[in-house]
Image (cartoon, rainbow over all chains, first blue to last red; front, side, top):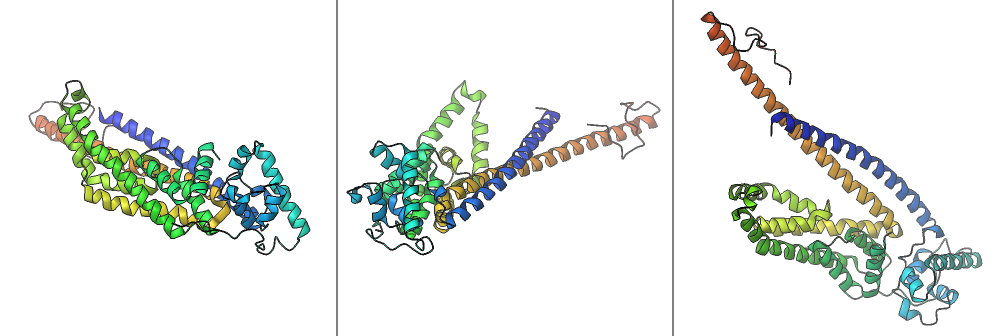
Length: 136
Length: 245
């Protein structure tokens, strides 16, 4: 391979690298902005930050709603069997669309907040079973 | 959020520590699993008391080191034999001659350490391939192990801590980490190709300068004897000027 061809290839690689670097910088800035927005919403306890990977005990602690309240709202009679099950798995277990289940949980949170206006500002009282730490 | 990640998170929430160990082990061996995101999520679960953060860190480091070592030994056991067979076979010699294989082994022994270390946490998608390659290139095991443990410690502690600190926003942190690691990769490409370009340009310049000097000295000798210079485009008296690339 002649030096001129090598020079062309390395120059091309540098141009591609520069293009990629500019693209990735824009992506990173956008991701940071998205993160800041999401963080603010999560800190404020906004229900739009509810995600399919969350379990009911997790939702209870993040959104300051008692676990027992969520179980009652969703008509779950045996909570021990679903404590470590995510909303997505819960939806498929109960043959319900995931979006509908997420909406239902969001409604439950809003309803609890309406009934207990101070609860969103302070940690929730643990009416349900306490958070269980797994044994390593 | 993709289905695979949701399945892994469900697996983690239902089966706890063993699920994390198995997922990290499989990912370290080379399976394309979004394990950094799983670790971020595990850190977020630990922040709410579901897991112990120290136990998570210890488990993920041991699992990833075990997976990496399996990859290394597979590469050493079968990869090196495959390379040797390729270098000795008639058809394979076109691609990889024994001399070239030896050169690549020496190069990997000199520079491979960085690849092993950085692929643990910066470009973890390449980790599995680097393990196989390190084994196949007979990279010294002790050095591999030291670099692997230190890299994997960073690779586990960074996402676990970020997940622990940022809690429910871990998926947004994952997006930032993903684009940041791509940016670092792109900057590495720019840096390396920039260095190559400068070196190549210097080499070409030096070669041309040597050629011109040779022509000048040749031309002067000839012009003393009364003959014309060899290349009419090159002026023997103008030592600072070079022909264009």
